[in-house]
Length: 387
Image (cartoon, rainbow, N blue to C red; front, side, top):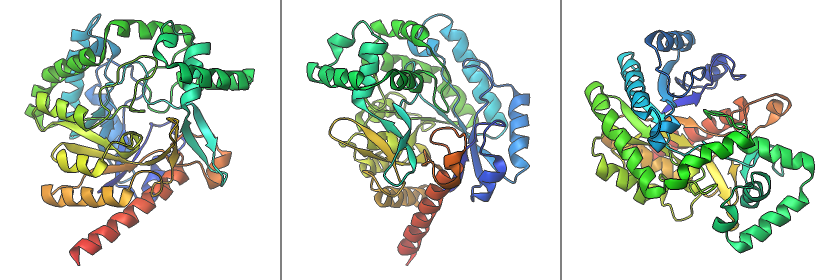
C-alpha cells in the first residue's frame, strides 16, 4: 500500500517534515481554509501541491472535499453548490489528484464524547460513550424528539450519567460534540446545532439515500470523463445520532450505492475503524465484494462493548482482525495491479506528544507507531505469499 498521513495544512502541529520522516510517500489533505461549498481554485491547489512536493511527497488523496449541507437536504441553492463541486473535481483532476474522499453524514462529521480518554497505560485515545451522547441529547441539547426516540432503559442510563457529571464535565461534553473534531467542516453552539437539525425532520434514511444518488448522478459524468475516483467514507459512528439518518454503515448500504451508480469511479474509502464498530460487519467479506470500488483505505482499530461504547485501540489490537484485513487488501492490489493509498488513522497520544497541544487522534508519534505496525504486517504478509 502507499503509506500516507493526513495533514491539516500549514497550521498543523505535525509538519510535512515529520510525515516524511515517518516513512510516508503521500499526503492526504484538503483546502481546509475554504468554506464548504466554495470552488477549490486551480491556483490554491497548485500552491498546496508545491508545499507538499518540497518535502519529496505527493498529494495522493483529497480528504475531504466537503459536501455542502444544502446538497444533502436538497434545499436552498443546492444546484449551485453541485456545480461548484463539479468545478472542484475538475480542478483537482486536472492537476493530477485522482482520488477524492467525502462523506454524506448529516450535520455532524465523526463524533466522540471524549477526545483524551486515558487508557490503563497512560496513553490517551478517542472514546465514544453512548450514555454520555444521549445525556447530552436529552438534558443539554434538550432536543424535542429525544425522549420519543431514545428507549426508556437508555433514558435511565443517560439520566444517571448526566447526574454523575459536574458542571465542568457537562461543558466539556458539549464542546467535544459541537466544537468540531479534526476534519470537521462546521463548528456549532447549542442554538446553531438545533437549527441545523431542523431540515432533517422531514428526511428519513430512504430520502437521504436518494439525495446522495441524485448528487452522484450529477457529478459522476465529470469523474468518468477525467478519471477521478470518488471514495465515500462510512458513517462514524455507523448508527443514528440525534435522530439523524445514517446511510453508509454496512455491506447493504454499499451494495445499494454500487447498484444505483454502477460507475467504478463511484467508490469507497474503506475505514476499518468505522465499519468495525458494528459486530455484524464482516470486513474481509466486504473487501472481497467491493474490491473494484475500494480506492482509499483508513486502517485503525476500535474496541467496543455491549453498551454501544467504543474507543480507539492500538492498530493491531481491538475488534478488527487487522491481519485478515490487510491480507485481503494485499490480494486485492495484486489482482488489480495497483497500490492503494492507505493512512493509519486516529493514533494514540503517547510519549512526548502527551505534553503537546495536538489535534485529537492525530498525534505524530501515535500515528507513526500505527504506520510502522501496519507496514511491518504488510511486508510479512507479502513475504509469506511470495514464498
